[in-house]
Amino acid sequence: MENGGKGGERKGADIEERLLDFAVRIGKVIDSLPETRLGRHIAKSLVTAKTNQLRSKIS
Image (cartoon, rainbow, N blue to C red; front, side):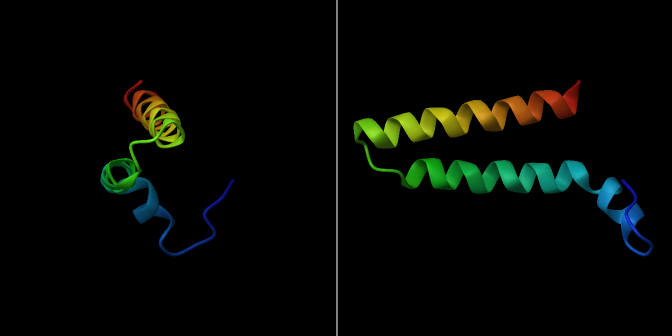
């Protein structure tokens, strides 16, 4: 898929920074979840998804 002109190079160049920002935001969401069974389940799912995304970027 093409980026379609201006700004396309920038998106690829700052992917690591954007991924780190995303990870920080997800961490804040996880911290704000209630300590209930559902909150822990959602937190675990988000942590798994976040770490999988970071692993795929590193590989």
